[in-house]
Image (cartoon, rainbow, N blue to C red; front, side):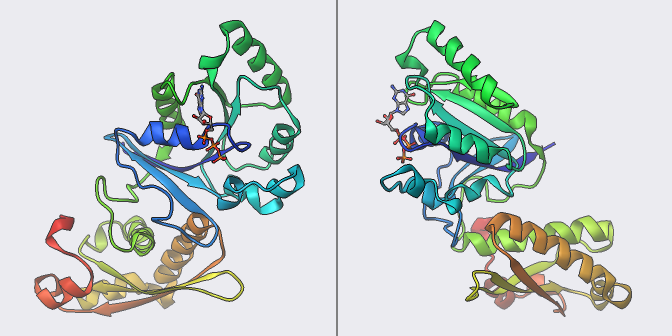
Length: 297
Ligand SMILES: Nc1nc2c(ncn2[C@@H]2O[C@H](COP(=O)(O)OP(=O)(O)OP(=O)(O)O)[C@@H](O)[C@H]2O)c(=O)[nH]1
């Protein structure tokens, strides 16, 4: 069973978020900041192995502290705790628990999914101090897991990965294992639609559907409009996809839209069209148009 999920890493500035991410991604595929940047959330890195794909999310705001607690902890700074499967809260072992930490802790109560505490920089303090710190933290929040690590020295990072995997649900591989497409976001949007088609239609519609994301554009209010066409190669498949009075396509649309919203962290309006292109798989023109090339397979 392959697992996947979205994980956000939060913590005060300088606690070691980037160091940890680099350590995790060191040996694996690293897709660093900006590659799949959206208006609000950034995919900071994607860890993929044979068992799971973990997509680390980050909110840009939390990385750009300004002076004063009030500023760097503005309301948007912690948005990445919503709509993710798990939150990793990093705190340094070598510093006292401060106002910044307490502020984040308060917000973590609203987090979607389990919250882990990663006590970082454990290489800088004694075992006794680590234990003492962990006890203090335990009193402040009901963490699902507490893991002492050293991001810099690569201590316990493998334990962290296996623990994350334990909590992930079965899921698809959102990104190719070792390759990025030109339009990562469009690719992911198309995969959401494909997943829902397979889920709701089961075996009735073969895997040969193509999904073309025609447009993906940000609206003035910050929402995103996605227009996509599902291409099938027989008329009967179109009928199945649309369903009785449009009931099937509605289900696919609503559920894909929900995933997109979760992924982009902003309202999404999805429009779907179904088009029949006889035997499109054999037509070079379409293969090109749909963005497939031999390298993808
Ligand atoms: N000794 C030690 N130093 C660490 C560890 N992790 C991070 N550091 C150091 O702490 C400093 C801050 O680390 P970053 O990874 O940049 O912290 P960050 O949380 O990403 O910081 P922002 O980008 O400001 O949010 C760097 O000098 C790191 O080398 C660790 O496990 N042990």
